[in-house]
Length: 144
View 1: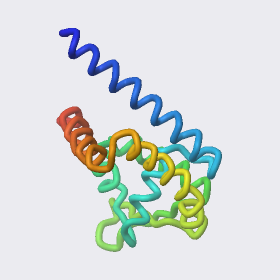
View 2 (view 1 turned 180 degrees about the vertical axis):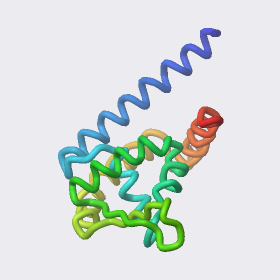
View 3 (view 1 turned 90 degrees about the horizontal axis):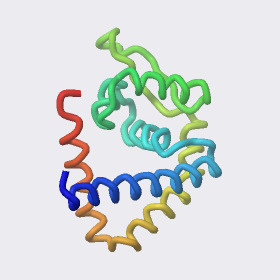
View 4 (view 1 turned 45 degrees about the vertical axis):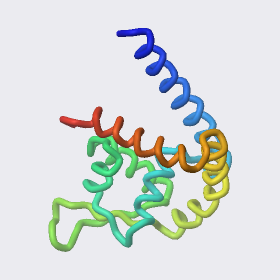
């Protein structure tokens, strides 16, 4: 690995850790949730009902990891799930009223984190970086 590649990897690790730590702390203080859990709630909220399998694909996670997270969110009363009417093998997810109110509580801290990213990078660069990070995630998700 070249010095440039080592530096890039090192910087990605540091940035990811710092942002995740700050975001997790802010969201934990607001609602007792992690960034990953809030991401799941936001994705479920973005449609009337979402298939658990589709959620795993969108988050580039294996289904067992999403199943475990959904179980925790259900235990907390934030998400409900039921079998699909058209396919009994498929779970459909929906936010509960508690889940909806919890998302409202995390809106400000989530917006604050995004504002810090926009300030650090500039909105145009932040959008470009989001595309680049998505490409990185795709590159490392192949074969999952």
